[in-house]
Amino acid sequence: MRETQPRPTRDGRPSRPGRSRLAAGLLLVLALAAAACSGSGEGTPTSTTVPAATSQPGLGDLRPPQGDYLAGCAAETARDLTAFEAVLAEGEPTLPELCAVVGPPDWEDGSGLLIVIYDLDDGGRVWLGYGGPQDLVYARWIGPGGDERVLFGF
Image (cartoon, rainbow, N blue to C red; front, side, top):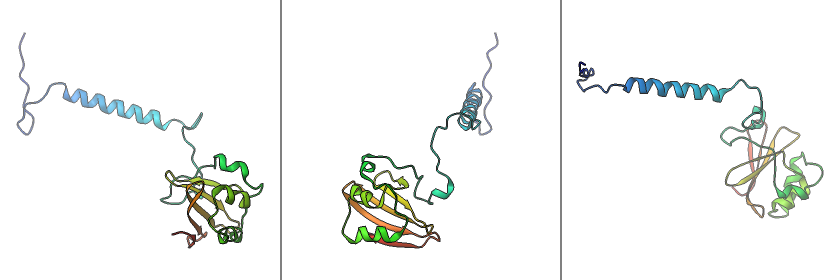
């Protein structure tokens, strides 16, 4: 049997037999994995996607509200900024106190802070960030045109 010597690569280094087959196999595995992840759109989704109209650039994906604080919420959600201004004028409401007056939020966001979001009739939103259920960090109104007003905090 004749022993073959590996041919040098273009830059003069000795080649490593089988390396190109390894690279081709790795590319094939990655291509198959990408195809499996994209799916056909049928069946059960792997994540919840909120429609584009309910997301705010740079603030993450909004998700339906969940949590123990929802148990004491008012039956209807306030849709006017004045309701939120009135609650905030009385002091720093806890999340259960806020929810008892203005109702359940429309959305949640955040991963460190719990951010509750209320959709208003004028197309704006009220965003309230809580460090915990008892700790309001900020409240902000964002208008439909992108105008912002601080209602509490920074």
